[in-house]
Length: 430
Ligand SMILES: NC(=O)C1=CN([C@@H]2O[C@H](COP(=O)(O)OP(=O)(O)OC[C@H]3O[C@@H](n4cnc5c(N)ncnc54)[C@H](OP(=O)(O)O)[C@@H]3O)[C@@H](O)[C@H]2O)C=CC1
Ligand SMILES: O=C(CO)COP(=O)(O)O
Image 1: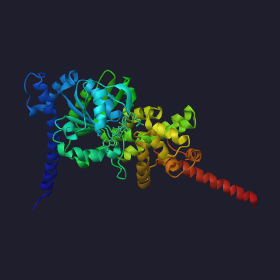
Image 2 (image 1 turned 30 degrees about the horizontal axis):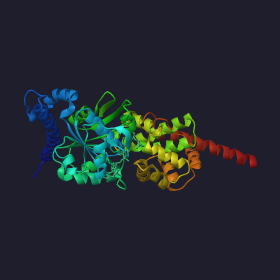
Image 3 (image 1 turned 90 degrees about the horizontal axis):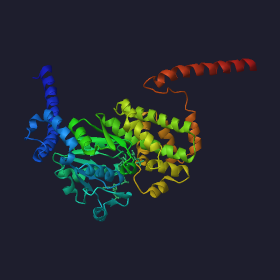
Image 4 (image 1 turned 180 degrees about the vertical axis):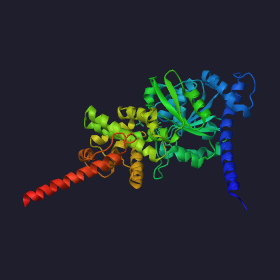
């Protein structure tokens, strides 16, 4: 017979097992980094992996000043995967960029440029290219994935047989079709044992290639992984901040694409600065509201991956999502706009996913619903926008004053004034 204490013991044991598994995972990453640092002469003596927690603090400083000991793979040879791989190679990390097209790999290795996605930008000559997925991911410390959201699960399935102790970092800012899964959800489903993180921020790839100072956020529950990513990518032109709110950071990157489309459309209508500011801040309100429902910390949306990325993509023609919105605003339909763009614009799928989820779960997302109505239900943009302006009295920042609180009082007040006016009118008629 089991006593309540026994069941507590079981629960504690389960917790202990989970804690142990997660600390084992972290230790294996750290042990790998430390081992190579030691072998290369960076460390004076071989460290004991089990004493890793204190040792890593010392070694991370060395890896910061010499990150060459990190072995990295970047999967996806589009503009962002290439830009990030280039940063890591320039920092001296042993970096391989995996691209699915064999001819593209050959051309990139020969010309050291990504002619299709980043024409005219010379890549670091230490960057290696591969078409062989197994060779690209085996024996790496960290695998960064920068394929479109719709290809993310397939990519994980393809690398699964070659995963041993590597960590995975998603650079993808999308959502899976129909499942509403974020990339971290897919990682947990497909590779439940791996140590993982997500990276997101205002990171227009072309600006990064031009060495325009930029910053991003690495979010992970694993402190060593956060440090390793900071060490790999940090440079004079690129700062990497850290967070442990994986959901919040990831949702910031995915949701802002919706509003970049809205802002691209607004720009086509030549709206004023007040209007742009209104869309941007109400977008932020929607994002954080949706984030909280998904378990994120609303304050994360005030950071680089929230308001930072929202600002960058909503104000720039370099953003592909902004460009899609702009084409829609100029009268093109969505299929024609996507075809003309010829690159990834995650927002096109994200609008559908978020519209459906918010409708199903009763989350108030008026801009997303309005955009959905214009793009997929063929509603006139101007009418939809004017309708948005009639959406009633709401609180500015609902985490400061709740909507229900303000609305309940207002609705009661308005109902009572309306009925008093109606009574007066009917008295007059008598
Ligand atoms: N570009 C940017 O400024 C930023 C982009 N991101 C995010 O990074 C992710 C990737 O975007 P980005 O690099 O811009 O996209 P691009 O459109 O520039 O490139 C997409 C890349 O993914 C490859 N690809 C497509 N499908 C598959 C597949 N099934 N298997 C393997 N590779 C595939 C494409 O190969 P092929 O050429 O053969 O089709 C191409 O190399 C997106 O989620 C985006 O939101 C994040 C921050 C900034
Ligand atoms: O996410 C981005 C910049 O942070 C890139 O935005 P687009 O995908 O709209 O080009």
